[in-house]
Amino acid sequence: MIATVEIAPMGRLRAGRRWKDRAFTAFLWACAFLAMVPLVLISVYVVSRGWHALSVNFFTKEPAGPLDPSAGGIAQSFVGTGLIVGMATLFSVPLGILTAIYLAEYGRGRFAGAVRLIAEVLLSTPSIVAGVFIWSLVVVAMGTFSALAAALALTVLMWPVIARAAEEILRLVPQELREGALALGVPRWRVILRVVVPTAGAGILTAIMLAVARGLGETAPILLTALGNDFINTNPLQPTDAVPLRVFADARTPVAALHELAWGGALMLLVAVLGLSIAARAVSSRQQKRMT
Amino acid sequence: MRRVEVADLSAWYGPKKVLHEVNVVAEPRKVTAIIGPSGCGKSTLIRCMNRMHEEVRGARVRGKVLFDGMDIYSPDVDPVDVRRRIGMVFQRANPFPTMSVFENAVAGMQLGGRFSRSELKVRAEGALRAAGLWEEVKDGLDEPGARLSGGQQQRLCIARALAVEPEVLLMDEPASALDPASTLRIEELIEELKRSFTVVIVTHNMQQAARISDWTLFMLYGEVVEFGPTSKMFTRPDEKRTEDYITGRFG
Ligand SMILES: Nc1ncnc2c1ncn2[C@@H]1O[C@H](COP(=O)(O)OP(=O)(O)O)[C@@H](O)[C@H]1O
Ligand SMILES: [Mg+2]
Image (tube, rainbow over all chains, first blue to last red; front, side, top):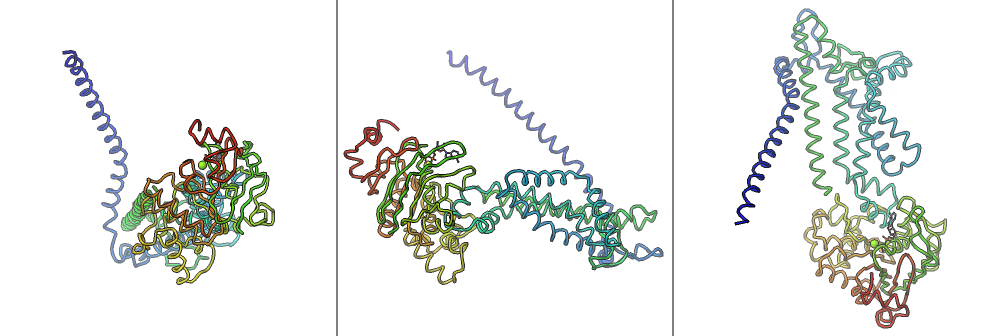
C-alpha cells in the first residue's frame, strides 16, 4: 500500500523531468541551428552568385581588358595566392613549430613568458597592422611591392597561430612517453623530435591547416605589400596578385562582368577555407582516438 | 661488476625533502626489492639510480650513486650515458603510440644511433625473446605497439629496455597494473633476467618481494628502516617496524 502511494508521485516527477530534459535538448538544437544560419546563408549566396564565373577561362586566363572583360580570368590571382601563401607557410611552419617546442619543452621563466605574450598579442592584432609593419620595413626598404613582402606579412599572422596551437598540443603528449624515451638513454632533443612531435603530429598538422586557412583569406596585409598585378607573376620580388586582392579590386569597379569574377574568386576562397577547416577537423578527431 | 651503491643519498622535490641519507647496495646477478608503504619514496629512490629524478621540474639530489665505483652524479658524467647503461621500466606500460611493435622494441637504438636494418632485426628478436614476448608478436611486428594487451605492452617495454643492452635494470612496480597471469609472467621473466643483469624492483606487494628478490630494502617516510637478505627480512627482521609491516600490522 505504502509502496504504491510512493511510486505514483515519483512517476509523475520523472515524467516532468523528462519533459524538461527534452525541452532543453530542443532548445540547444535550436541554438546550434541558429549559429549555423549565417554560415549556410553566406555559403548559399556566394555559391549562387559565384558559380557562373567558374569556367576554364576563369582559371587559366589573365584579365582580358576593358573591351570584353568577361572573356578573361583570374589565373594570376591563383598563382599569386599560391606563391604568397606557399612562401608564408614555408616561413611560419618551422618558426611556429620551433617556438612551440621551445615553449612546451624548454621554456620556463621570463623569456618564455615574453615569447608567449608576443604570440598572444599578435594573435589579436588587427591584420592591417602586420601589413603596415612589413610595408614600412620591407616594401620601403626594397623600393617595391612584392610577393615576398606579402608572405612576410602573412608570416607575422600565421606564426602565432601555429606556435600557440602547437604548444597546447605538445603539452597534451603524456609525460610518460618522454620519460620512457629518456630512460632509454636518448638525448632530449631527439626525444622531442622523434617521439613527442610525431605523437602530436596530427594535432600539429591541424594547427598548420588552420593557419594556412587564415593566410588564404587575409586581404589587408597583402594589400599593402603585394599590391596586385594583372599578369601572372612568379618572381617573389615583384608585385603579385592574390585572390582576395582581386575580389577587392574587381568588386569596386562598376563593371558587371568583373563583379562576376569577384564572386567567383570569393567562392574559391570559401571552398578553400571550408575544405581546410573540415580536413583539419577530420585529422584532429583521428588524432584524439590515437592519444587515448 | 655492475654493482650499484647508493651512498648517503637525499632527494628533494622543490623544498620538500623526500629521501633522507639513504644507503643501499644492489649486487650484480641479484634482485634487490624496495618495499614500503605508498609515498615512502620508493619511486624517487629508483629514479635517482639512473638520473631520471632530475627530469621532474625543481627536483634535486645530494649524495652519491656509485656504479662500479663511478659516481653517476659527478659533473663530468652525461645522464644520457647513465640511462643507456642503467635501464628502467615504469609502473604504467608506455609504448610509443606512433611506433609498431618492432619499432618500439628497438626504439632506444633507432633514436640513439645508426644501426643497419639487419642489426635491428637481430636485436629486436633477441630483446623480444628475452622479454618472453616473441612467440606472441612475431607475426605482427608491424602492428602498432599500443594495440597489444596491457601485459604484452609491459613486456614490450621490458624488451625495449633490454634492446639497448643495459647492465642494470630498474623496475618501478612493473606488474602493479597487470592481472595475475601477466604478473606471474613478469615474475618468471625477472628470474630469467637476473642471470645476466643487476635487477632493482620496487613493489608494494610483499609476497612478490619475498618470492623474487635476494635482497630487500624496507623504507618508511623516505628513510631506510632495514636492508638485508630477503630470507632474513621476512623471517627474523632486526627492526620491530619491519616485522610490523611485513606481517601487515600497518602500511
Ligand atoms: N613530482 C613530484 N612533485 C612533488 N612531490 C612528489 C613528486 N613525486 C613524488 N612526490 C612526493 O615524494 C614522496 C615520495 O614519493 P614516491 O617516491 O612516489 O613514493 P612511492 O613510490 O613510495 O609511492 C611523496 O610524499 C610524494 O608526495
Ligand atoms: Mg611509486
